[in-house]
Length: 203
Figure 1 (spheres, rainbow, N blue to C red):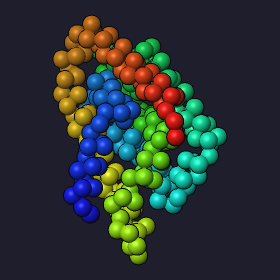
Figure 2: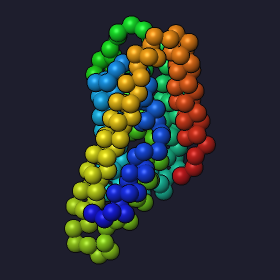
Figure 3: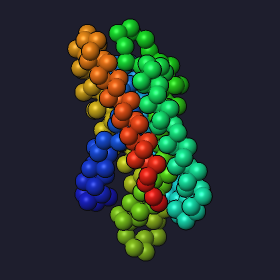
């Protein structure tokens, strides 16, 4: 495993996307432990994409316009649905003063679906992982699985740190109704914008 892979992977996992927004929202609304569960859900959501890229199934998704558009449409719909739930103060992303905890199943389910329904991840890993495997390596598949596991560990660690930072500010935020309203609107808008960005993203 090269330092180039570690640096590139670190940059990728630190860039805010749907997983980071989701983890931050859960951290503010639910607290530290739920944010770790959310981070785990988001991490598990990239497993199908990694497996698909390693086995070559991502190439089919990239080649088939219909398959790509179907998965993308589902992903856009789910992001908009998440935005609506946040705006209405419902589900796992509820930001409110009560000490209400969402079920672990719901937190993991939402995190998994956010990433599973993003077809760009399969295409990304199809292009990303092979770059760090020597040409002609006899154990290329094993090496890519190892790199994928390292990437997953880095993803979970980065998301958990985001969650820990946000949860540290939770009490301060929850004591201010105007701040809660502002955050609810910000997270809702973030999910909506991510949905629109995905909608206009090509293969």
